[in-house]
Image 1 (cartoon, rainbow, N blue to C red):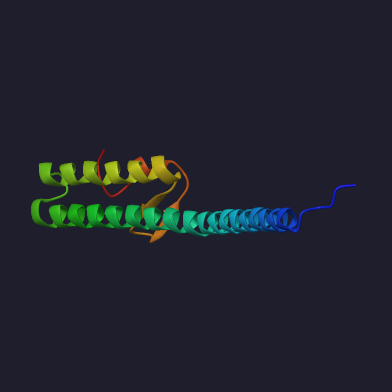
Image 2: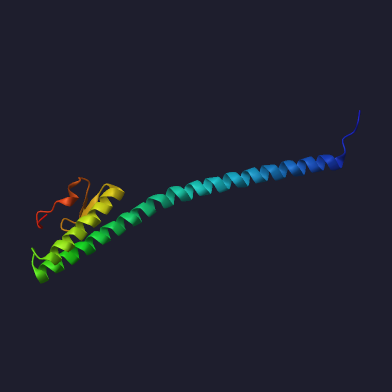
Length: 120
């Protein structure tokens, strides 16, 4: 019977260890990637939702300023009202919610286009 070469045994052991270490590294990398994705995704969603809220609040402030300066039935107020509806529509399309600055809350009904304060 042929005897095993000690150098070949060492090479096999070294290769097996390298493959095991590579597999362990890949599993660790995949686990960390999945964890980071699961943690970062909701945060990004919340940041975008907050940006929507801020845009709507700015549009509401511009509308209120136009009404105070030019009157509720002025062309300037009407333009700002259309801007506000546009921002609300954007948030509705992105999140199926829209922010109401008067109530300071999110609504999940599609009534973003109606506001009893302003004419259509």
